[in-house]
Image (cartoon, rainbow, N blue to C red; front, side, top):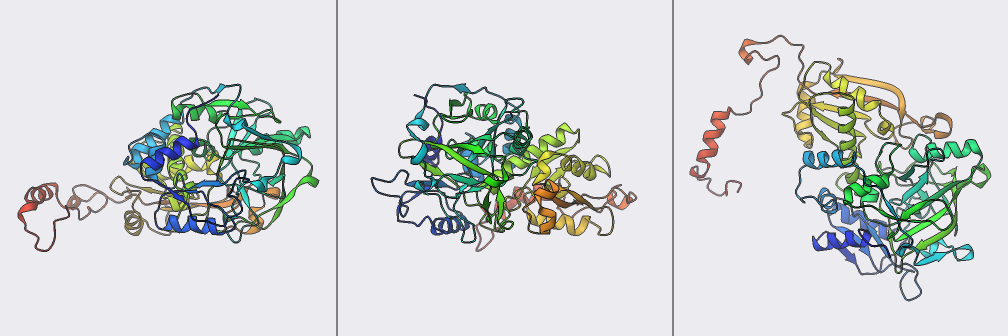
Amino acid sequence: MADGPDLRTALDTLRAAGELAEVTGEVDWNRELGTVTREVLRRKGPALLFTNIRDYHGPDARCGQVATSILASHRRIALLLGLPEDIDNRALVDYVTRTNRERVTPKLVDDGPVHENVLLGDDIDLTAFPVPHWHHLDGGRYINTFGAVVTKDPVSGIANAGVYRGMISGRDKIPMLMVPSQHWGRHWAEYLRRGEPMPVASVYGWHPVMDFLAGSPIPRDVCEYDVMGAYLGEPVQLVKCRTVDLEVPATAELVVEGYLSPDPASYEMEGPFGEFTGYVSDLPTPRPTVQVTAITHRNQPIFRGTLEGSLPGASGENSYMSSVQRAAIAWQALTTAGVPGITDVYVHPVTNGTTIVVQIDKVNEGHAKWVAAALWSTGAALYRYKYVIVVDQDVDPSDYSAIDWAIAYRVRPGTDDIVVFPGTFGSPIDPSTPLEDRSVADLGSGLWNRMLIDATRTWRYAPQPQWGGARFPPTVVPAPEDLELVHRRWTEYGFAGWDGGR
């Protein structure tokens, strides 16, 4: 029987670090569970394991637990990746950038706990699992929030794991949002060309490294299982699915197998959904629909899901995961493009990478435009990098007040300090974009107008002797020798009524 890292070992790690709370009071799966989750996020609370869910407790319940918010802080992400819990952004992003390039080939095993229970035919019932109705404006119960959707390129045979939304439609159907430019969208295009159904397997609950990578734009010719093995330091143990030609982690909690039919007559209505933007997404629309052919699960499985939607002060795990992975992938893209002088990349979780801040050691006046052009030409830009803000090394990209200060005093509106790049491919779920420019069916993606804010000090001014030959005025930061003196004498000042900031 397979063993190794899985959701349960990850929960043990969080529990030991004081980063997991079990919710033992009864909670309704219909809206209440999602609202509790949002309130815990607002209060900067831990990951949650709901163990007493209305309609899903007692000896006859097939599944009675829901785990969520596992990746909803940088500390939790660091713990689950085996890193120091107080690691800073630059070191964390550097680790992710390096590990994303490493590979450990998965291992196929004969059997695993995920096949302790196999449901076929009339036994298939998605509503037997405590899938929440997360938000009161959602169109239904969304089973695919942080489920990893496994598909395979029919030409190369390379598997892909991605995070795509989908909601329950009856006992055995899951209509899904399909965007052609995403990895599984490219697989889907080939199946459509052939007129064949596409095999799909959705994994709800395995080690969170799967969520961390499935929700990130790993290159299309790379199998996410290979990268997961690199993060875990050992091969991912896989088993073959029972009804589709795909492989899934042997110690997964729950797997739903099925096919997406190319026949539009099979499409079911999907939406709306409270998306990662923090807004309810587009209008209900007929979508390609997974016809479920099997459900397999461990004994006493734990359903894995997440509350989507970034809100100021209450952003969730997708936002925190994106803040790390999007920064790492952007840094790698800049390096690959040959952009020099990158010293830090930061994504504020509330923006999910829609806004990205890049700190540079400036080498020429056009350096910021070089940064933006490199980022906007990547596939990751589909949902990210709508706003690129470039700052100097004296501006902390993680500090909004520092960014505001740089924009206030280093940016001249009406000049090329602000550059707008209109009509590019972009997110189909951005609420600031008109509905007609979000039509994936008509346009292949949404349309975005992107913007660069060059908040670096300009080199266009003449050097001034009074500024030590610099082209831009010096700041009011104390002289190093003055600061050294004050630090040396700090305890001598005797701040009455204050401990001196110790």
